[in-house]
Length: 413
Ligand SMILES: Nc1ncnc2c1ncn2[C@@H]1O[C@H](COP(=O)(O)OP(=O)(O)OP(=O)(O)O)[C@@H](O)[C@H]1O
Image 1: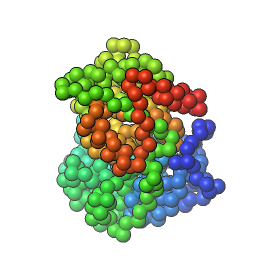
Image 2: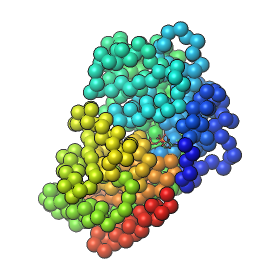
Image 3: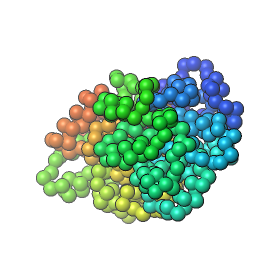
Image 4: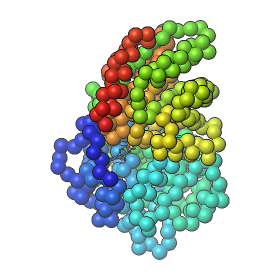
């Protein structure tokens, strides 16, 4: 279906090119067209000619600008070019830091793959026996580090035929949290393989560190130092009075959110909190007041996590209260408002959080609620670090700009 929405310059290209001008097979071009993809985004135009010839690549571009298609098209083309193989063996391994992102990548690949190409998600909280069955016929394996490492260690996933290893949200996968699992996974990989890293953010340390894993890495980094946040997102913050009792401060933030939601019109909204208990509590409060709200976190059973995301993708639910589990990678095209109830522990997560609104160059709005003192200063540091334009609002009588921004977004879409 053709996308008639207006997109910002973050995803517009000046060149008069379509995917046809790239070295992509006829079948994949047809599938892209059927999926509504005709013109490549800037990162796709720059990265695909390099990834499709098999070079190791580090891809960096703002959130929601189409990095997933870069490695998905590359993966499908690799499978396509080896179609003469009699056995269906795994050709591509794609790693993601969360189960939700892994499931989403599989969904994207399914929308543009041929029927002869097999892809499946391998994540914790699901049956290993089922994995064993799926791996008998799976060209593209998408999974989270824990489960993939286990499948390699137990010889259920055979790595010898893997030709491409993708790390989506690579800076998260290369962080300390996953280091042991990633090192182990690399130790199983064949020497001759292509490696592709994708993320909106990389610290210079991670870039240097990643060179360990790659041969003569090529960099495609579309980063605008002057404006690393999406052009289409209008950012706001509200400072409230600090209070020595944490629960009191939390209650003040909740009351403010209730007041704000009552005044605003939005299509879908994500509310982030660093703590699961707080996300769950906010969800309950909103539900009681009649808001169409759901909640997810890594402590929920997998089936429930999958259902929550499905409800959001299908627009069955308007508000998702969540932790940073969904601050990266998640592509909910109706989200036009993101609220942060606190600042994330890592400053780059701020960019990922606000990037959930305004997918593929759409317009959106973010609001960060901070307490005076340390938390406010932390926001100032992030603002300076990324050269961000965050407009400060007064909690009592300053909500009008926020109301107007969301109204103008609704009119424009
Ligand atoms: N060439 C294109 N034409 C139209 N829409 C596109 C194109 N490429 C990607 N999209 C759409 O843009 C949205 C965002 O894409 P994607 O999730 O790949 O972004 P990303 O760069 O990986 O974001 P993040 O950094 O948040 O993970 C998706 O809904 C996708 O369908």
